[in-house]
Image (cartoon, rainbow, N blue to C red):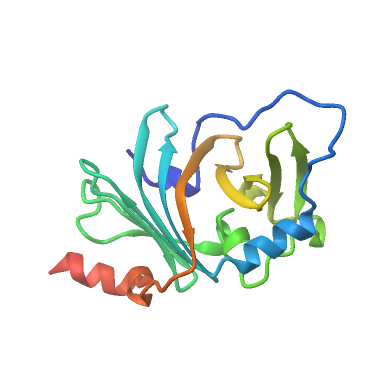
Length: 203
């Protein structure tokens, strides 16, 4: 599986829902922004629906701002890291220990990893809907819509991020569904050190 699709491309399940006449339980953008800003560290299991319809599983570690690590369960040997302003995709099948790298700012995931999330600013939000169960926020960089967008799915009482979909400029989609999410706790900086991981794999 090409890990480039994790952040850049994809075709997967859509977060579609039946339209309802009211938004009585819709979570306001300021509450969602406050929730995301309150997430300093996160650890969770995830299920990823890949562009070809196959499914991968693994564990994600997030340390805001700007750092994330996606470890995939065997038999996959892939690892996706965000740190130091870069995204690195390690795939033993294709790059022999050295990752493909991209600027984090060019990926939709940067929206929730930035220092101060403010979804109401700069026309960032292009969709804000409620389906009777969850609130979905669709956000993109208003200055670079060609980088794609991210669809974030939240439940309320309390507010919790449940899943997201990364959509590239052509509309292709990759879905990440979170489970057993634990916020808080200490995550070592080494988990997000791309240089250190590259050196370790090159030995």
